[in-house]
Image (cartoon, rainbow, N blue to C red):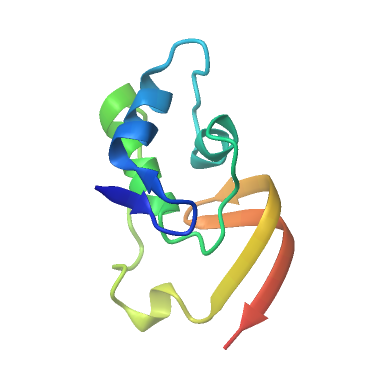
Length: 100
């Protein structure tokens, strides 16, 4: 199953990266870097975060809004480049193009 359609990353690739003791990613941003890419639209970050929690037992913060709520995604933001950080479901990337 494809988890990230922008970078064409499968669930198996992500699981293998999360389980790799040499890589030992702790955040979705680190998973992207281990796979040699960066987030584009960021929609898969929540799934990768859940996979990290499931596989590594990392704690997930409580959800504030469901993914289907318009309030959860008030605007679509696309970015590319290095992952600078992650806060909740927001992935900060080097270059951003904001579209409404």
